[in-house]
Image (tube, rainbow over all chains, first blue to last red; front, side, top):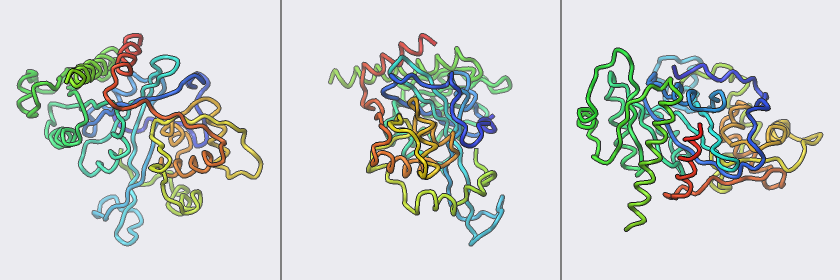
Length: 208
Length: 117
């Protein structure tokens, strides 16, 4: 599930075991993007050293008559939440993982998010591939390197990797990995796949 | 993920406007990122705006902008305004994210760190 994670009270700080060492000098980020319910937060939670936290941004949009509380001037304020987790890689370097919804109407969140991101994981549910089309197109446009991770739900159709590559119209170089977002080991392997891919890209560009 | 402002009535636009004094997000000018690490350089002081004091209390050890936003339950844009004040007053230090360019050393360090998980 993608919601209802952060239970921290307002003003509460990190638990002492969640504090970074004072030597922590820089951070990097990876974005996990996918549709609702695809398992972004599950993946973040399975690899994060802290319980996932939620940062929120308000979005003012024209009211679409659903979920309208106040109905002031036919505009609604929607709070869009991003769940994120953290992995301390060593005494200096920290990796943050942000889960963000893939639907086009949330792309406004992406501006600050992808700036400086190492890369992205597109988390895919084979029962709802269509959510991923726009996301993948947008990442390609923005030149954000990404891997595709298929979260294996028990009742999901069993496509081969090559069938998925075709269905998602993915370039040959983009890795596809099947994962179980609930598993720490599997989630870690997804991140490692992304890093190996980034390394190969960096080596290729250095060689030019 | 998307929901109507629930426990944010007190965090409605009016309150946020008061907290920031109506100023908008200057992050671009300060170079703050979601994962910029903030460290307090000073203790909270009497008479300080409560949100400034809260940030100083939180950042006794390094904390990312995103974490500050999560713990204080304020939007990142509001946190950025508050941090800009604290940076100007030299009450906090900002540790910039690692360079995003395909940097082999960073990527190797991430791989190494992940393998140790």
